[in-house]
Length: 165
Image (cartoon, rainbow, N blue to C red):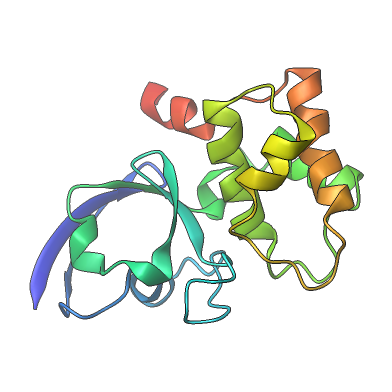
């Protein structure tokens, strides 16, 4: 067993983990955060995407021990005081989800994109979410939702919010 410490959704966590335990399994099983999904076990789908030290990563490609000392943000840490983040609200308003399985990963990748590029083109949005697969939509409404947040200038990175608290 290895002892790790991390900041997850603004909260300090400590745990003993097996060296081979994947970060996604640590997040879901040990922390009880089931927003990030396990979709493919091959790092193709992006359903397990979280922000790791401010960047989107597929948590099925990393061991939990590698997250020692890291700041991790999951979809559960995006909303504030029970109110949807503007990106979550835009996904709802633009019908950017159907079954919802890919939505947490899409939103986390979108947060990374908009944090680095607050005014992306449609092509940059499509490239920014290209690591996330959706089997239900044609991506049009997902792109529309992300674009609507960028154009309205209402995007506030939840990473900045967490650092201020």
